[in-house]
Amino acid sequence: MPYTLPDLPYPFDALEPYIDARTMEVHHDKHHQTYVTNLNAALEGSDLGELPIAELLTKLDEVAPDKRNAVRNNGGGHYNHSLFWESLSGSGGGEPSGELASAISSAFGSFADFQAKIKAAGLGQFGSGWAWLVHDGSGLEVLATPNQDSPISAGKTPLLGVDVWEHAYYLLYQNRRPDYIDAWWNVVNWDTVAARLSAAS
Ligand code: MN3
Image (cartoon, rainbow, N blue to C red; front, side, top):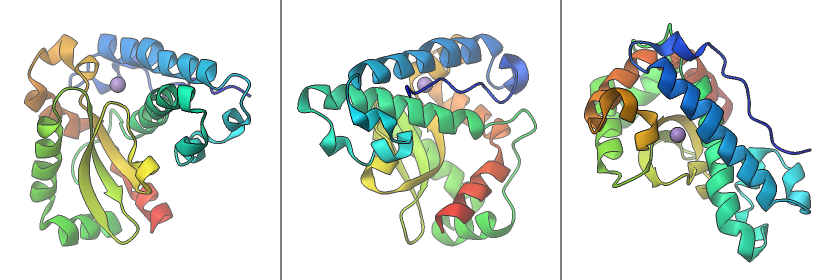
């Protein structure tokens, strides 16, 4: 069965004023749809297209060499964006609690230190990519990936990612990536992130 575009779990305007409805519409309906379409095209005739997307991204070396980059980019795009939509909520923001809050404090010092690390990773990613909070098997780590590379391909479990491609923010923030990252914290769904940590650890 081909991969399909998941519905957004909220209306396009749910993340206003931090992320505008028009950006969400184009980002989900056009950008994410294109990753799905191109992923299915690259896997046409291959059994690998039967795998759950997260598993496919751990088996990129099994993809035919002439299709591997297309699967890496578009499969990563599909997986990363599916995770991204679920990580956000119009009633999000604030700070995490419980086990997630403790894990962040012990890994990074404080929630503010963690936020600074994510921002530095997002701003330090030249061109397009993502900044991530991941579970690396033993604890939490912040890292950046270029393009649509996903930490899951490196054996790390993504808990939260911020999309720093210009398509994620340009309509509202133009070149001001720092302002977008600052605003994005207001729509992070910490319940989802906490559930991912529980599943990973
Ligand atoms: Mn994007």
